[in-house]
Length: 246
Image 1 (cartoon, helix red, strand yellow):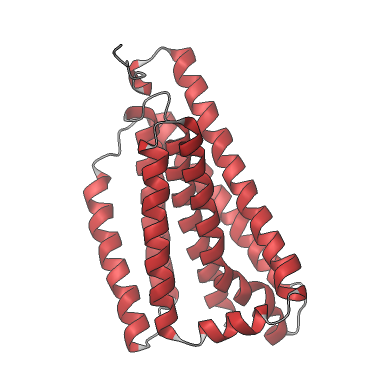
Image 2 (tube, rainbow, N blue to C red):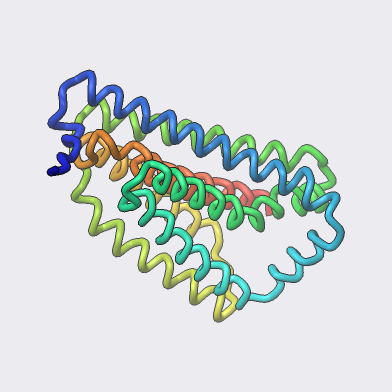
């Protein structure tokens, strides 16, 4: 029996395309809520109440080469999660890929959120500073994401030409990050702003792919791509805001 793949969203009828888009953004919302829930557990339960957790985290952050291990592990886990989401076959494997990726993102966010939620209020003397700056970063990320999404949906433009540009730019950025870890120099506000521009480009690219290059049964994989770009944007918006408070 021959298996027939679902049509591309751009080639399907309006109702199928609309249903695919709704499923994709519903899964994106679910991934964001899961991310928030994981961070709430980490910062509400593990850090305050598990003995030694905070000391272990600070100790790990003080060793630059530990970041190389973290980045290597994140890349490996991300590759596996994407493989499951795109090529897992069964819907269960696709959801496993999305869940694994959300967990990986939540863990790699911990050091930056620790600076925002714990160190910044301690240094500034304002106990609300952490919640305020994270809230500001979340609102800015949401506004940027909504605006970029509107551009794609209103124009219907195919931004797939950004793919090679983004790939080269991200490789350069990753090289700069590795050099910063190895040689101990700081990546400041300008690097964060450059990464925000790259993340914005990635959102345009991923949103365009949803309309033009994804099949109507690939809503889980499409939501993973979008979540990755939104997480990247939020990370560097938060980083930039922290830099302005230093």
